[in-house]
Image (tube, rainbow, N blue to C red):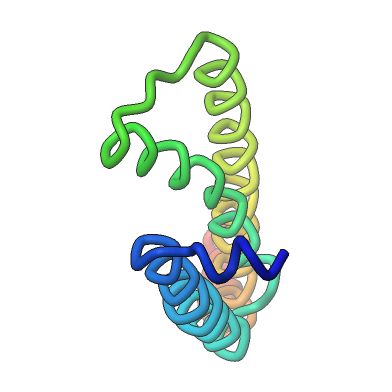
Length: 115
């Protein structure tokens, strides 16, 4: 292993520094800040997009050409994230509607009197 380390050029060491600084420190640091401010269930769907972003960067930066299996798996992943996001949005709407009824009991009395 030591001969490979000694033979690593500036590109190799640049990759190591990039991985250590941006991917590890910055990426994980921002992730933990998100977890401090938001519930885990709210942050997780965006973490599931990481492989898709990696593929997109590979296509944009390196010129990779994704095949049909990759497009299919990407569509499946995005649809899963969409299902999670829509379910969360629906739950929030139900909670807001319930909290409005609890916070404003006078509107419930008016609706009963109107009947």
